[in-house]
Length: 382
Image 1 (cartoon, rainbow, N blue to C red):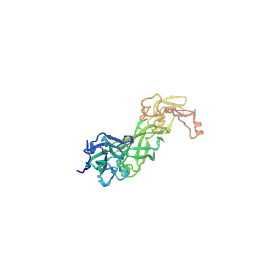
Image 2 (image 1 turned 45 degrees about the vertical axis):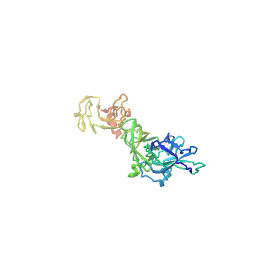
Image 3 (image 1 turned 90 degrees about the horizontal axis):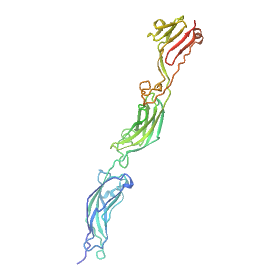
Image 4 (image 1 turned 180 degrees about the vertical axis):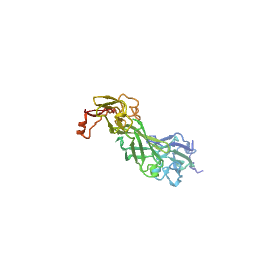
């Protein structure tokens, strides 16, 4: 009777292994204890050495792609190194049956492996023998990586009422890791600290046209900021990049809108004041006609030739958000400037200058003045 080398045998405790793609290299190593069991070289062949032989039968890279056949696979993935699933060959320990493998970070897909157990042969039967092939599928499920970007600067600044646009303010814009280039990307900007309503337009937009812009293929984005009219203040803006699968990442940007002193404004009740040369008149109310005639005003007459007209200057303002009384805490004394918005407590003074100095000197004992509350006063010569 001639001795023959019996084929070794084993069993698999499972035929499908599922893991999620590794997001960091330190989490790329996986071990499944006792995946193979009952390893034997055959009857009376216990002295032979055993080893597992593992080859790829088919694969899908990335997950869900068209399967690759046995002649198209390498390292249990595509022959293209960028599409390989494993950083090192899959191994099964012939003594313990433990399955171990190390993934390429961020790669996903599915591979079906053919597994055979081989023996070393013996002095009597030197030809090695192998078990029938069994199939094991390793499925590496995709994980949506967070998108990322880099801001050109942590702070931008501009003057009140001056908008700006800066190309490539965000660079390195990406949907995430491997094979996520088709995801649409959207930037959003939100003021999380600072006065409200300072930003009229605040946007970060991927550069390019059409699909290039949607997926941010150029990897850059333009920042556009327009402050609201007459508004100023320091803002902390949360810049968020979100992909079409819902993952997002955020950074903070400081936006400084510097205050610019606006010119004060006012209007006069009339462009001409007609008075009696021989009398003085002090009013507590104004005539409504364009010509502020002495006869139409309610005068308190005097012989000192002193004239006073209250509220001659009206609608007096130091400028938008610039005449907040220091004691005010809620509305700053004007609409649109509540306590959470920056205002200034400026004070104004009127300069009244005669166009004809000589003519004015012949008429007035005391030249006309307008008080901060808008009252006109002057004294005539007899």
